Image (cartoon, rainbow, N blue to C red; front, side):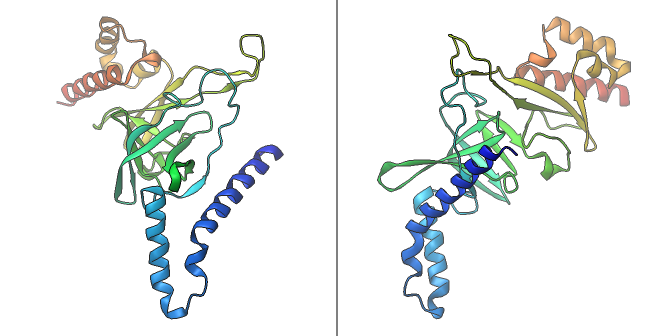
Length: 254
């Protein structure tokens, strides 16, 4: 990890610790052992009042956006947050402000402070099971025993054969008069086909067809008829494709 990035993360962590300490230190001053439990509960209640959610969700470092002056955005959709739902350890947190930095692969929670100030927290993917944003469900592959470099994958469908999509961008450090501070690339998506917890990367039409040779002609015709460019397909196109794919599998198995 570059030295500058290490220092930046250290600064973010120290800032969060300082902020939380300034909020919660009075709870521990002049405390007595018999009041320890009530003080711990007060700490939890204070966390809820500050963040609008429990400390189970707010677990991470302060988020700082790198290359803020670069053209474009590091986020999956836009710089604005969406009212979303997060699922973690059997609990759901609805109506929370989320954004997804796909350059750094960070899920960002926007929190409100007393007085109206706002703070962005980079949530720990160790705790997050899944999240729902813009009516699309993103799952933590580690929670479903799938190995991949992506911390989150969008679930296209939930059938015997399921498809997932991983999203990423890159910071392009080429500078010119149009982009004096560099720019972020366009969104790139990687498709995965899953069955029995085995993940197959689909990097071309041919790869998809090779997963089901007996239906090669039918799937190829479906893609052509619906004008689907596989690696640029929308979530809705992929969902309909997987419905067709699974139906063909059922016919074959039957």
